[in-house]
Amino acid sequence: AWSKEPGWARARRARFSKISAGRTAIKANDDYLAGKIADFKERKQHERELTQEEMVQKQLDSNFRIMEQIRARVDAIVKDPKTAEALKPYYPYGCKRPTFHDEYLPTFNLPHVTLVDTAPRGVTLINERGVVHEGTEYPLDVLIYATGFQWMATSTFNMVVGRGGRSLSEKWESEGTKTFLGLHSHGFPNLFIVSGPQGGGGSFNFTDAIDQHGDYIVWMLSSMRERGANIVDIKKEPEEVYAEHCRKADIATAPLRDCISYYNGHGDAEPGSLAYYGGGNWHKYRKQAQTTLEPFVFESAPEG
Image (cartoon, rainbow, N blue to C red; front, side, top):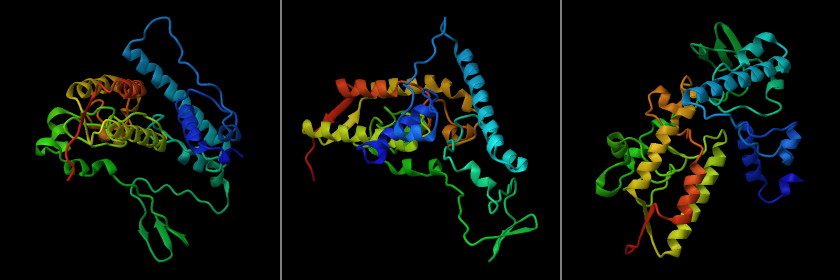
């Protein structure tokens, strides 16, 4: 069985990332699980180089077609028109992670499943029997809270202090968000930021991005050991170059500007500063750095 093959989970995550990026195709869920998908497709070549505005418009046009297909699929599966309408997404593709489980939409056709839209004010009250909304009580055996959390709103970066006693948040507030690969920040040796600002990927599959960052950190620790180093920092110039690249690549995220999310600091983030990396060269920067080691400063200091 496919689930007994070594590395099956990583291969499945990689396939999902390709599929969600629109760079490959599947005919059925079984094909997806078994890895029977089309080869990675090259991007369409145009007769001339498109302007940034033209590229954004093409993204918006494709975005609309994809979302129309998704909404049509809801109509085709969910039998009750009112329920189907409530399930249709009206936001840019990529604004939220897509649901892809085969049983998700058919669930709403079951007789014991009711979809209640509580917008905009939420439920009226919760009592010992269940939930009340607009005068109707919905008896429940179990109530599961899925209210989410604001992980980007924490003060974690205030707690990270680098050389000179400056915190990471102080650096970014004064200089703008600057990292190398989203993993290093100059002046903060031995700090590895996983899935943080300017991190590579832009993938719906958060686990896949974390997996790649983990591989990189393991490589770095091995490289330090080989050199007898116990400290690594990033040089200032490579960080400046990468941060500027992220700001320029931010044009690729234009279709998500209307998506109020942590992706863009709820609409207030500086260009190229947050989790969604708009460029396509993260792997190029990473591989070049791993080959030349030029961006890094390795040091050895007495332990203890």
